[in-house]
Amino acid sequence: MHIFLKRIFSHLLLALVFILASIFVVQKVNSTPFLHSQIVLIRRSLTHLQLSFDDSSREKVFIPYTKPFITLQGFNSSTTIIAWNDTAGKKGVDNNPLGTYKSATIAIDAPYFIAKNITFKNTSPRPTPGSNNSQAVALRISGDAAVFMGCQFLGAQDTLYDHKGRHFFQDCYVEGSVDFIFGNGLSMYRNCHLHAIGAPYQAITAQNRANPLDDSGFSFINCKVTGSGPLYLGRAWGTFSRVIYSFTYMDELVLPKGWNDWNDPKRQL
Image 1 (cartoon, rainbow, N blue to C red):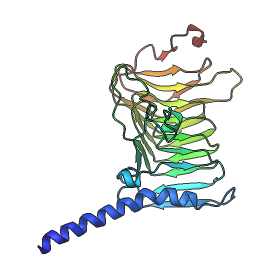
Image 2 (image 1 turned 90 degrees about the vertical axis):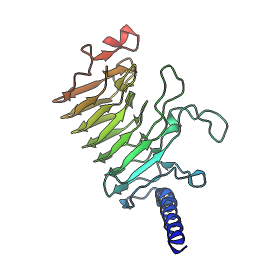
Image 3 (image 1 turned 120 degrees about the vertical axis):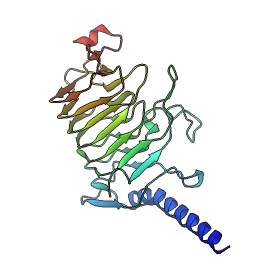
Image 4 (image 1 turned 30 degrees about the vertical axis):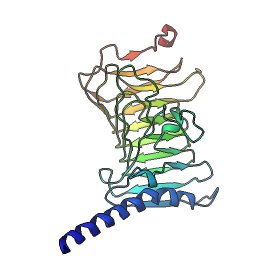
């Protein structure tokens, strides 16, 4: 009987830890003063920061424009994880589909955001061929001057929404299937690992530069491309899509053609 009660207590304690972890980031972000000008450091060293522990503690993280200079720092990316499972087809509180934009596990509108040693994950199942509204974003970054170091971004279709603004990714790991780095950001990825997890039709990027005067594009420097193919380096979501790979190792899974014009020959300019 004593052993049974000890096990029950251990399970209850573990559940409490997960529930506290699930609300930790949201509470810290919400308590940050509006339009402040000093760095706010939020550290997490629990074994697993899981935002989808159960229905009663389901939270998504949103950092609004009015909360700049926030830093999220984990112990390491393999043990500090922020996860959620929304998709574009799921219905929100207004009973309408969330759409890709609102499917993100964590969304950042604030400028001067920094993340270190954290995994951002969308746990939705990998979409089946031909499925609709299966986009499932792990992280959306719309704020300017953001930095990610030693982070992981895990998902399938549309994993990392590099929406807009200037961003720097250092020593990061990005995993997905279709367009798993997409958006219209002006971003540099240095020493990053891009891993395709397999789909009938795959592409690493879908960059959305729509105007030749737009100052946006993705640059990959000293990166590595692995996984299962076949794989395009990118699809031209925008008419003037711009993506550059330099000094980057690529497995044989990359198609010799390299690029896909989104069935629009004008995008081959």
